[in-house]
Length: 265
Image (cartoon, rainbow, N blue to C red):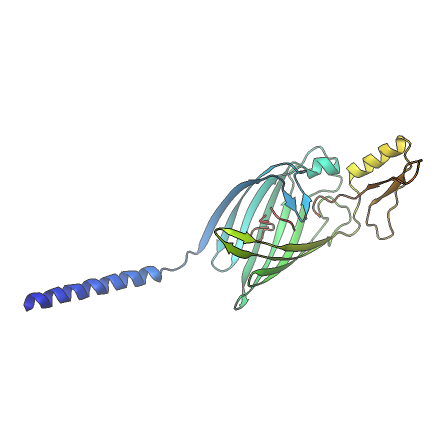
C-alpha cells in the first residue's frame, strides 16, 4: 500500500515537472532582434520591369536586421550593367541599397510599412548622378500589398526628375510544396524624362548615314526620339528613351526584395 502511494506520488511529481518545463519553453520570450542573411543569383536582374544587368546574370546578397518593436534596416547589393550600357558612363557596375523603416499592425490582418531606401552606385560618373533616395509607404491586407514610393531627388541619372513616383500592387498566394504565385502591377512616372545617351548616339549615326532623322521633345519634356524615315518611304526608326530604373525585401525595396529584391516592380 505504501509502495503504491510512493509510486503515485513520484509519477505526480514527474508530471508536474514535465508540465512546468513545457510551459516555460512555450512561454520563452521572443528575441529582441533577428539578423538574416541572403545570397543568390539571377539570369537577369530586373527592377520595375527594366533589366539592370542588360539581360545578363547577376550575383546578389544582403543582410537584414529586424527589431521586435517593428524597426528594421538592411543593406543589399548586386552587379549592374545599365549605367555603362545605356548612359554611356565609364564607371558604375555595382548597386548597393541601404534601407530602413518601421512596420506594424493597424488592425487585424492590416499592416503598414514606412521607410526610406538609398540606391547607391559607387563611382558612377553619369552626367546626372545615378544615386537615388526614395521614401515609401505600404499597406498590407491579407496577401495583398499596395505601396507608394517617391524620389527625394533626381531619379537614377534622369536630370530634373525629383518627385518621380512609383505605385504598385502585389500579392502572394501559397500554393503548397514551397511554391507561391506572386502577381504584381506597377506604374513608374518620371518628370522631365530624357532620352538615354545610347539612343541619342544611334539616332546621330542614322542621320550621318543618310537616313532622315528628327529629334522632337514634347512640351512636357518627356523624351522620346522621333521617328526617322528612310528616303524610300515608310520605315520608321524610333529611339525610345531608356530609363534604367523605370522597374524589394521587406521590402527592400527594395527589396527590394526587393526586392527584396528579383522583381518586376
